[in-house]
Image (cartoon, helix red, strand yellow):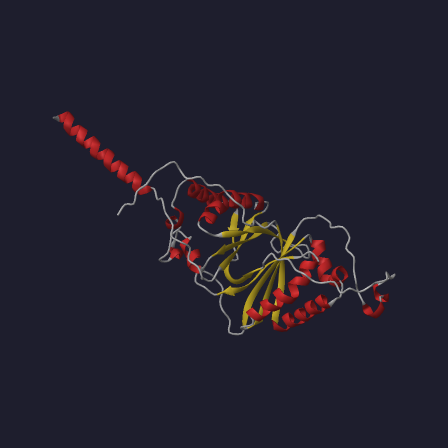
Length: 334
């Protein structure tokens, strides 16, 4: 009888233990995507230990991002801020800026595992737990060892630049080579291109305070008139976004202006300088250049304040990753 009682106790303990273990794991299935929402991009800055950026990036790309992309986010990348035109205001620190895309603010909330998640989170409801989640937590902890602070994170809404072919017909003119550009007849600047020069890519992040309510008109000018000429001479736009004044962000809306960020890739800092100082020398002064100049003047008309930062690093893109399912089975539990 004593043995039987012990057996019952052991059985109940084992059953309770199995129930406890099953309650500790969280597997998921997912509904169909929610469409028609306003995409938001989170731009987050970080101050890091001097020399800590490479470790920061390694932990992000190898441990954190696979989990967040499993949640449906898409990473543009994490970039180190560089100062080719000035001295760093923080010479004893590295600085980084990270960009991540979410289908909506609700989606961003759902990826949080804290009070920011609102009624839609946290992240385990999107992707369960498991070793991929454990790796994410380890990556976040490891990143924290080199993180010293932040200027904050800002939500942006707007437009990713599309990778598009651009057809700019030639004018069908005949040219005679001259000794100097200034001696070209009627001020004509036609060009031929030399070989490309492989160098270290950079990104330029431009910030503007612009006339209130002008963002969509500003984007149309940028996308239709300004970017095509720059794309012809080797620049690759990434996107243009307006600061979105949402909860969980330090951004404060002004009645006098909107805030706009524009991100573009250049083959090198030297490429950026050449475009800034002598774009026409690279692309000629045909009607496409006239349109670009017109857009430049109109964008300046909308702009109240303008600054830029230089970033080092490659876009993460939409890299595939293989995250196999764990060797388990589950059933729905009411």
